[in-house]
Length: 95
Image (tube, rainbow, N blue to C red):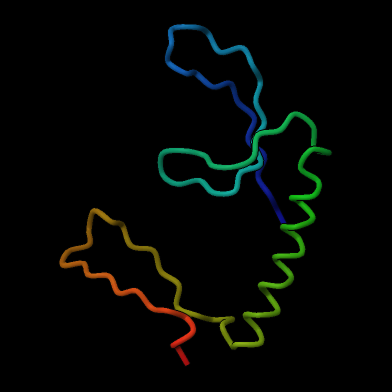
């Protein structure tokens, strides 16, 4: 399993020069931002790293169990979607 650690200085836009070196365990990176857990020492996030490893193993097991290994995952840009409707499903009712 690979994880991304982002190291950077963050400009809050208040006119000051950023000096603090930041580290972030990146959980997701949408188009315009980074989302994750900020830390100073890797020991601070060791529980989360162990969780991620276990979650990856569980995810692989469940995908295999339910034959989801080769699903047709796709990404669609919101700006190009037209005539959008959304439907909510309650999982207890789905068979």
